Image 1 (cartoon, one colour):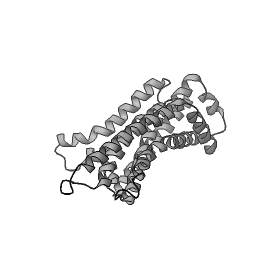
Image 2: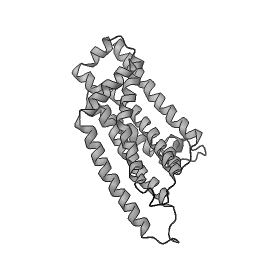
Image 3: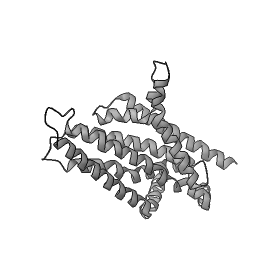
Image 4: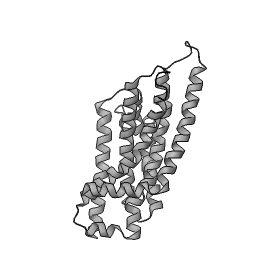
Length: 245
């Protein structure tokens, strides 16, 4: 049943122009950033370069791709639950012999598969330098993994926001609000006297940063897995409460 739900979301996502618009606009922006990084790096002398070409591409190209993924997830997720609440099609799913947990997992995986091409776009751009520039392919793979894990979190938050309301526009704003909170909460660390760095740990971009540097840390993997599972569990609880109403 999960496979059928995934296929349903993929078919629905691929026939709508929104996904292709996001991919097209994203590739145009990433290509421009890619060319700017190459031009700036080539214009520096060997003694003026503070980072390798791979590091410059990871921090700039993959960093901005994360922003594109963060903006794309709520837009793609708004129809998956919120849109179905509005037009009544979710009542048919609710009446079908399928568990709500399977519905949540199927929609989540479907959304993640739809947004995964955004995570591959920066790697495709970087790999065009194969044989031309001195690239660290291990760091490229690690950055791609980190970007995909961040997209996994964005998808879970988007699905959760979509479960809160029957208005897709409102769901998008809720998702953006949650994502913005997890983006800037790390700055609150400088306003407190605590030494636990709790606010920094809660910020997704702090964890992605280590992946972009080529480091795979257990704490970063745990962060993305934990909060993805949390928002999926909240989505499931929301659907259960809706069924009981």
